[in-house]
Image 1 (cartoon, one colour):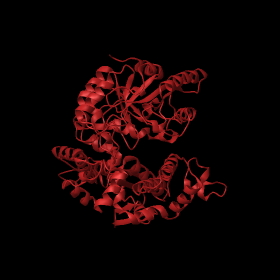
Image 2 (cartoon, rainbow, N blue to C red; image 1 turned 90 degrees about the vertical axis):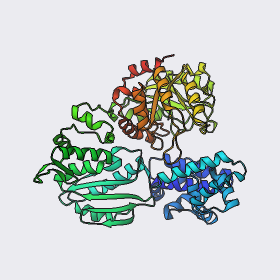
Image 3 (cartoon, one colour; image 1 turned 120 degrees about the vertical axis):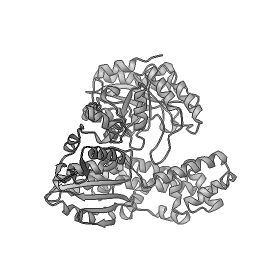
Image 4 (cartoon, helix red, strand yellow; image 1 turned 90 degrees about the horizontal axis):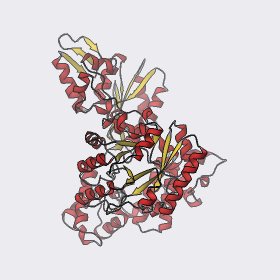
Length: 577
């Protein structure tokens, strides 16, 4: 059982305990344990099986929680969770995903209305019954209704990182079989969509059919949906991610990759182009329409070249101008992971990170970065032990001393400074001026009207210290919608003032979105791609940020942290007033 699954069950149990009104100390212990396990680089199950180790050696795991974790590993649940699910309907866990309710609000729902489904909750709001409960009103009803609508849209979607991990694990297992040459993900995973509905894996080799039988009996398969000559469909784990595995002859691989990668809009336009050229394109190959002679299909490059096009990167196959540019040789050179020279957003044990500055720097150096910025939280996030003015100045001094000693990587002193409700920075400008880099982020008061949020951001852009807008829309994928504001107006002003937009590579955020990144680029904005890492292993999420940037048509010249260290230092010193 992997760490993420164990942590998820701990989080769920903690939430159910809060609904039940349990002791806050016990609730916090479950949540702290979940956080510790999520950050752990080794398998908790492996620690449990090692007779020389103890789970309680893991920071944040006490004796009581160790017993709970053993239960979870043995049977994918624990006594406390089971007990609470007998008191509350299972839909309680789904209600936690609805913005505006929270555990206390859900407890009131069950106490007064005994709701047992999402439909019943929706009907309560439509009948204006929710506002009868303490601390609830008409605005909350509207918010809950919007959130229910969004919940229904995203049901059956999975984070890009989740699908990527599932694809890697299954591909590795299939590749180990005799006679398998390659296993290649297609579909929305290959295009880098921020969420994925299902997973397509294309298999080639001397005997690719062996993969179909293997997948049907794979240990993580929860349900077999179908088995055929060329395809097996299954659902993985309790999460229910559908995986379609297709066996292909080598000569059809390129055409199949093109077809199953999509998008639908891109493929329709490509097929129409083929028809105009007297050709027919399918997942089996590219053929002459008159005599069915195959003219291409073994590689994607061959298919696109035969159609008079440059090969088009999967991330931009959305029929939004890429085909016309491929015809004239005008496609952009999209940013790649190896273009990045530094990571500019990370946290340490000084606030809510899980590693020291030195440990984060060492991990980044091992990845080949030339520089990083350490950007712990500001004091508004008191729960994260955020930095006040005195600690900010001390930190800037500490970083200057570290750079004099040398760690083999340049450290920029930074801060993720909260943008307060009225638009001012959480830390005085005099203290911020001591730092190399200030990221301004919104972590609270996200329910403001669009006009108010726009004014808040515009006022923040006036700060002489602000260089980057962090996770600019505040969204949490599959959990929290972006807060509303006039993005175009903010993008124009950010470009004018030389404030970059962050593309936050945390898989739960991927914020700024690809569409917004392309829009901001058209208005002259610059960008950074950073991980928002709270642990060294989170630095590996950079690839998801790069994928999002590529979907936004960003090139290396658009991204500040592709610059060599001295050029980057000059870039963040300069700001327009």
